[in-house]
Length: 145
Image 1: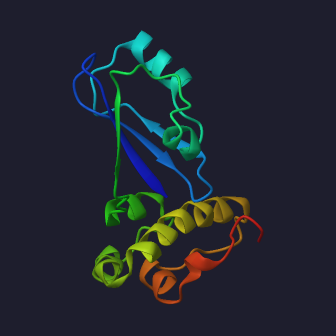
Image 2: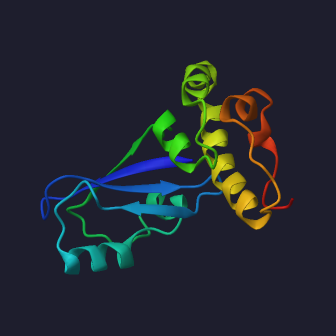
């Protein structure tokens, strides 16, 4: 995952673009800036669809726009929001800082897929989060199960 911050003199604050491991645009977040509806419409239309477009300048954003790459950080709150079983939070929260950053990202993405798996398979009872993290269940491809 790669994260880019987009700023411009035409609005206050910053917009955020998040790309997956394949370099494809996944998330456009305009919640931390003061764009009006027409600016958001133009911004979404002009956003670079791949990281390669950012690196090669192949996007339709104006020259006044600044795009800066920042570290992608997944917080425990992001993980907990996606995880389908809300029990024993304190145990999972204690484990979170012990995970490598790459494992935190994988756990966050895995939790999204795991929640969808639990919805598809209503007979399945989700595991408590700290056990799920300890057994590295986030490495499973829940979309294929």
